[in-house]
Length: 134
Ligand code: MN
Image (tube, rainbow, N blue to C red; front, side, top):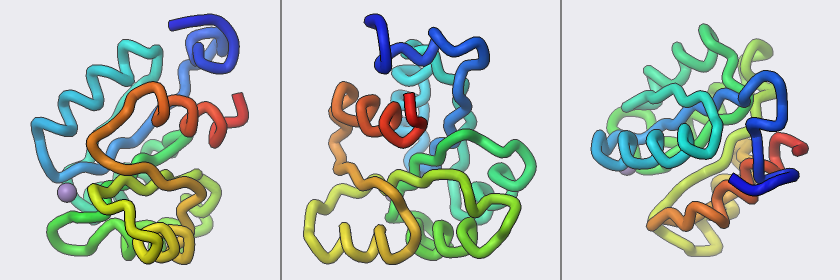
């Protein structure tokens, strides 16, 4: 990692990210990439699991896949925002669709950012840094 805002390891406590992704291979690949960038990473394979993990572990930021089994990423984000214990955690929506309507739905649900798959790591980490204020 380079110097400055791109380098979360400059902070004494590495930021913790919760990655919500139902595809196990995608979850593992993205986790590994972000850990290499200096983040602590938690994973959740469903919206329900994400709600439990967010409430229990208070991550600094959540990467939210929209297409999930059970409650989808929009509904999961709405529930996170409705709970005072998790409402302040920034959520970045991740979806394979770049449609304007998907963006709007993500922001309406309470997401602060939006990014599309396949993941562009430089673009995503820039958005993560922006949301973390570093
Ligand atoms: Mn998915």
